[in-house]
Length: 436
Ligand SMILES: NC(=[NH2+])NCCC[C@H]1O[C@@H](n2cnc3c(N)ncnc32)[C@H](O)[C@@H]1O
Image 1: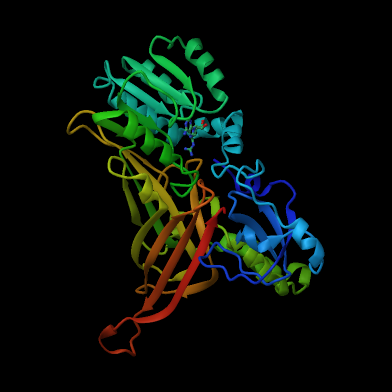
Image 2: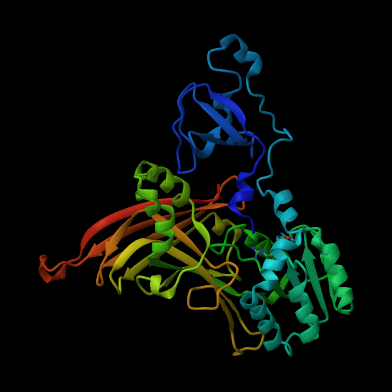
C-alpha cells in the first residue's frame, strides 16, 4: 500500500522550458505558455511526462519541452530534448520496483497482520469452508507472509496451496511454511501472478488485493488476469464480490486542524494562507480517515459493485456510480467518505457468506476510510438531499493510480415553493488525484 509521501519522493526534477503554448485536455493534463519553466518529475512514456508548473502537477506532451534557458535559440537545436523510446530513465508505469520493494520489508505486512478484522475475516472464510476445501487446489495471490495459505493448511485439508508472492518476502514465506510444518501442502512461488506458471488449474483463487478506496494499487488487475488464466470452470473467487460505499459527512476536526486554524493563530490573522491550505490539504483524498457514525449526514449507500467473476480488466479504466442521499440531520457538509465491503461466498451451496466491512459501523481496519474534502463546506438541513455521481478513472500512464471525480447537487425543499418542489441549493464537482 503506497503512501503519498513515498510517491512524492521522486529524484530531483529536471528543468525544462515550454517551446510553445499548450492547453491541457482532461483533468490530469497541465496547460502552459511558451517559455514557462516546468519541473519534470518523471517520464513514464516517450510522449507524456509528469511535470509541475507553479505547484500543480500533471501530464505534459514531451515534444513541447526543451532543456536550456528560454531565448537561447541557437542552442535549441542541439539541446532539443532527446526523446527516444528505450530511454532507461522512463519510469515503470507500474512502479513495481518501489511497490514490491515496499512489500519486501515487514512494515506493511506487520500493519496487515495486526489488522484483526481483516485477518480474522480470512481465517473465518477458511474455517467455515474447511470441509469443502478438502482435496481442493488453492491459489493465494499476493500471499505476503503466507498467512492465508497457513490458515488453509492448518484449518483444512486442501491438496495444495500455491502461495504466489512477487516481493523478496517470498524467501521468508518459505521459511514460515517450513517453520509451521506446512510444506506438504503449501508451495511458495516467487513471481508476479501474471507471469508465474502453475502446474494445474485451481479450484479456489483467494487474495487480499483491496487497496485504499478499494482499487488503489490496482492489484485487482493481477487477480483478474490470474482468474482468467488459472481458475477452472466453476472455480471460486475469494472475495467473490466487492462494493464501494459512500456517505456525505461532517469532518469538523479535520477542517478545524487544516483550515480554520489559519483564522486566528496566536491572535493573528493568517487567512491569506487558506487558499494554500485548501490546495495542499484538500486537493487529494485523505487516506486512513476514521469517520464516526455521528459524522454521517445520511445513511451510506453502495455506489459501485464489482462481481469478481465477470469484472474485466478493461472495466477498470473507468467505473461510474450514482448516489442520492437524504440528509437525516442538519449539519455541515464537509465532504464525502468512502470505504469498501467484500463478500466471500461459501463453497457449499446455500452456505453462509462471510463479509469484511471496512465502514464506520464495523471494527476499524488498517484501511480505515477515505475522506474527500470539498473546497468549501456547506450547511445542510434535515430534509435536504445530496445526489450526484462518482467516477473512478484509472490513470492512463501510472497504472496503480486513479482520479476520483465527484459531482453533486444539494436540493433543499423550502416552504416558499409550492408542493415542496425541490430547488437546487448548490452544485459542486471536484476531482481528487490518488495520487497521480
Ligand atoms: N491488499 C493490498 N493492497 N495489499 C496486500 C497484499 C499485497 C501483497 O501481494 C503482493 N502482490 C501484489 N501484486 C502481486 C502480483 N501481481 N503478483 C504477486 N504478488 C503480488 C505484494 O508483494 C504484497 O506482498
